[in-house]
Image (cartoon, rainbow over the protein chains, first blue to last red):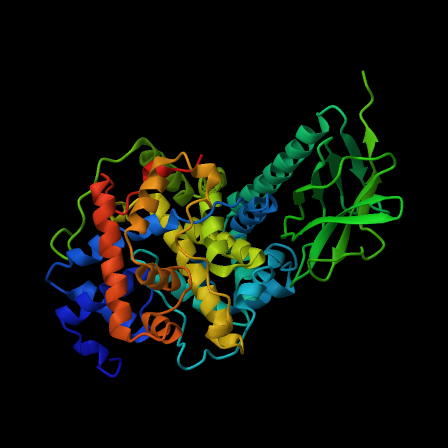
Length: 314
Length: 211
């Protein structure tokens, strides 16, 4: 079936493949041929819409699960750090080098991207021949954008180029971008703090001001509600890289309970909402930096921590 | 446009749909708080789909992030006639999730057969929180009209990321049989959805916005 030259696909060949096409279940060569055919065919293909129209309903069958609250901050921070309007096309290589020699250390969000590592772990491994380049149909998404993504994935210099792109835009008067990023960082942290304050406002809650040993280290606030809801908001964190995460802990006596982990993008703010037991006297809340999620014992010293106290009753 | 590939008729745009388009237009203009609104509307669906396909929360988070970044970069290229913003966004999520598990599969040494199969498409009580939602009930009813083998083939293809040929190999079934199961299964669903008064030609599910 697949030895038929793709270019020779007839209208009927394509009709035969449409159900698989709308599900994204064709072989790469078949998919390409169908796409090309649809782009050029002068006859109508009502079947594409008929079958494709069913697909969104399949999405509605998934069990609904909330993503972790920290994901929003990651998404917004990554977007804020993202130059708009495909700048990678416009940035000359020399600019990229200049950018790196200059201030490229901070502006992009390597943490965020490195956090994507699990999905792209096999960096240079060529795809198995049978597998071909991963590709799937879905009528709308954006071939061009995929191509950009592929280019980035392949290029070991993509970081440099992206970082330089930010700088280039700034140099061209893109102050607006920086402003947006600062605003986003502020908004992200503000909403995280608002979450903590919501918990702290409940009677019976305990709140800790988190601070580091050094004066300019990460600081923040965390609160545990009477029902065990715990929320953290921390800023000035170093971005995480690779599988690295910040793990939140509740330390009570000699019991150290991991509360959950999150990664941090270039904006340096982190938040977490989790569930633990109700607060006890002398409870310490803190963050440790771990090489990977799932730590059962914190790597000491904690990078920021504080003792939880009940709000003074007024 | 209409004479090329049979553009579907548009149903009446709903308020949610209109609101989504306005938000997307602001996203295209580079407004971060519009992206935040979009995220808040669809984070749950996006994450749930990514998690369903990958079965890994970390991977699902990365996919959701990539998908919203994709929307941020490409909001300006959303074509209004092609379907709702929601469908557009969720198709990006699906697309990336499938890409991710195909890459993962390409690098894992385990043969497909030993992977845990994805959960079945049917499961009457797995959505307690949405049991009251009419649309889901309609979809469930539509799914029930499929035979088990049809559901399995669609499930493995759409949520399992398998190609039709891979579905055939996995289920020890001739390719032609797999193709016809998928075709007939989708047709049966479509018939039921249309019978329930849902528009299954339009990819327009905007009435089902998230709470």
